[in-house]
Image (tube, rainbow, N blue to C red; front, side, top):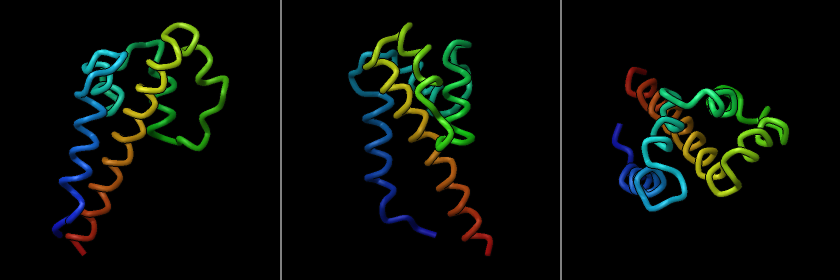
Length: 98
């Protein structure tokens, strides 16, 4: 199945993960893939990937205190985009197999 929105979606992902930001791009890529995330950020990133709707203020407070508002925002957005992309690609693959 051809995804007409793939180029736009890929540009957004590239901009978030590789653009100028407060956090290092390797950290944003780790958050997007949920692989190689530092231990202090792993619970938040894993929760975003598994059950984002369950993320609470308490989940964000620890990383926010250590890394700051902007960095935590970038990590959250990177994780959310990575998780959504993984789910979208799985759904498209399932449609291809149907």
